Length: 447
Image (cartoon, rainbow, N blue to C red; front, side, top):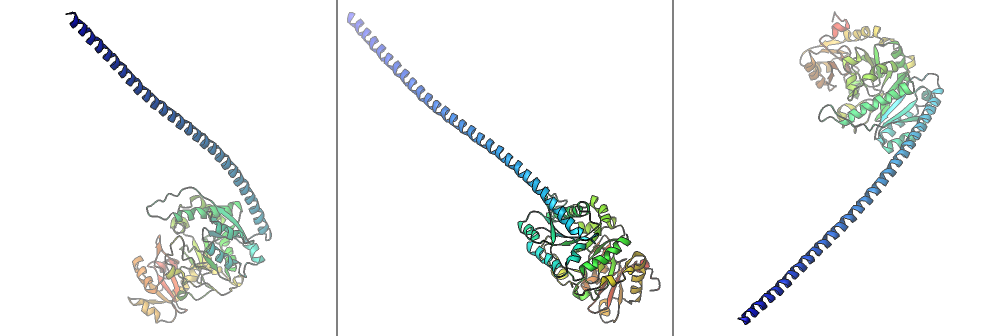
């Protein structure tokens, strides 16, 4: 019995020893696992601390860079302000120097440029070529107005001592009014307004002639505008004077001495006065400024002087209009090559009181031609011919047969006066396309 108790106690002791060792081993394992986890946590914490310090360092570096950039921008802004002030001062001195040579310039001449340095050079050389002598330069101070910052255009313009350079920088984004419109037409309208404001209000010119950077001028360009300036001052029914004829292709013109009044704004080398700009500037359109000028609400019944033979030639096949109509309408234009003595010409027939009667007498003498074969008949008749059209579609059909512009704006055909479009047709004969109400407006009752 005692032996059994002893064995039982031995077993209990052994079990206790085993349990003790098991518990110790579990505790050791637990402590080891905890230690491992603690090590991982410490390592993770150290990594986070390192990353945080790195991020803080990077933020500090960026903040330092930002402060440095802000300071750099401040210095650049100050430099730009100083350069602009210097440029303004040089510009004022340059303009004063040019203008001081003559008491009253006829008009400032501005070439509107953007990013076509080669075109600009051709235009400037055309102006300076044997015709922009000191006597002319004093009457017509020459400017180049650049839209944007193309360095080649700026460099080219500033390489000429005979002109003043002004620059339009516009960073405001363009919002077109209709889908698919070209942003360029909006930028052009902004540039025109800025340049005209500069020349009329900053430099106080009384008249400005606007050219584009893809134009050549005729030998009598300046004399033509000097004679026309007197008309502008006398007759307030004339809104502007243009050097352009939309139907000025070689086959449609003949007489370099002939001038016309037109209800349709021609553009492409034109002169306006400060009083007209005072009216237009506050309401200048966001885009398509030339078509805007052709609206009756803007020209208000006033008319435009244009020549039969163009005094400018547009060679700009590549530009904002993407070469539209260049081959058909612009390339064949005849640039006048006759040195007309405009000072000796009596232009009083172009005043409002005289012109309607003058033009009516010419139209009245033209031989009326009727029928569907009117174009063929006109070709075989000697002397001037008169063809009447019923409406716009009828006009477009007849114009297409001859090859002249078919376009209308706000009810007015291109080049027309009182609805009458006149052009030569392969000879000295004139063709008059006469509207349904033209004869009455001209006072021709016996035709």
